[in-house]
View 1 (cartoon, helix red, strand yellow):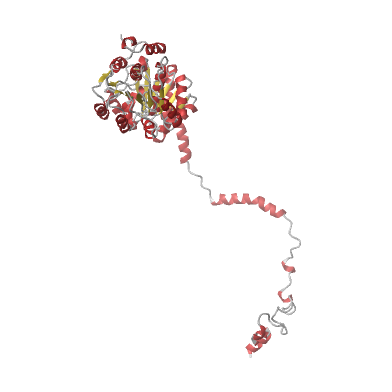
View 2: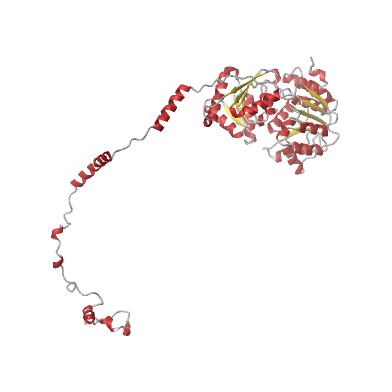
Length: 491
């Protein structure tokens, strides 16, 4: 069996490896490290969880042991598709360079440009970055890539899925032609093969397993579940997930639950927390500090269940994940391999269970076609107590279908009479107004005084008073009284 001491690594690197507890290299490490130390380009194809990160970090540290970095001109470059994977690569360098004086810088989003510029200005031996943030620094004039001696592209197929291939091609064009390139991927899509043919020079190809296969240490299973009603599918899927977690018992020490959409990640995490499970979400919409906090809590064992989108499916090295639950069948079959690869790492046993509803049948068939085998079917541990549910539905249906009672005219009249009785009694007890005169006491019309007795109308029966506003030009008929006008009219 090959040992790390047989790979001609730097003695200080070997000491750090021994202190980390590693004894023997994995197949991808044993195949990639020797040609990398010779300065050759390397094309590594291996399933996730096989130790690809150490396959390039260990030879890079050995090759960079001699030399000194200049300001704004890193000596090596590592490209990673996600912030989490880039941070993980940086942690690996910290582990293996603890007895050396190599410097590094991590360029990822969510961190201040000012802090990153300060690191670059001092000069770094290893620059670890995501493609977008790296180009941001370059376009701001804060970074030169002409001094790169070794360039690493990690998880290249994930780069393709995330649309980073144009950025990768541009970054390649900014680095020297004489650089050494280490290229790692779990799958070899045609676009990835085109890039390797363009930018790699006679690479040493190391393929330790058939492309897009799952580790043999992972026990797979799929639960096919048909919801009782279409509008209950989401809630019943969450109930199936909880039943699967409970059915694994103490064997499920921790788990990652994968969802296709970020909104479902939040909903599933909130639902699990509601039912007493120690769960938290992680996806691309969270603040970088929050994502790192959640991820670190999961690594430290403070968090039992991590609900994630595919941002956490690639390259995250969390060795002791016991279970992976696919709440949704992934849209891309390659993602299935990367998801379940979060468990069963470094030769450990792992379990991966997938929930499949009727609408996921097509995606499941694509996964099985990629794996060239059928995923074993597992009986659903969830049974929604059909008797109670049926009884509740019958009661609800009976209440909805029960006809309203019609009220007859006579009954409505009797109800009205009963309602009016208190009001009638109250009116009967009220005293009559004493000051209001009776109709019989009112004077008759004949007894009323004539108009003349009440006094003449103002301005009409007073001949000696001039009419206001007319002056000397008032017509004569307007000065006549009513009686005089009536007599003149009758004459």
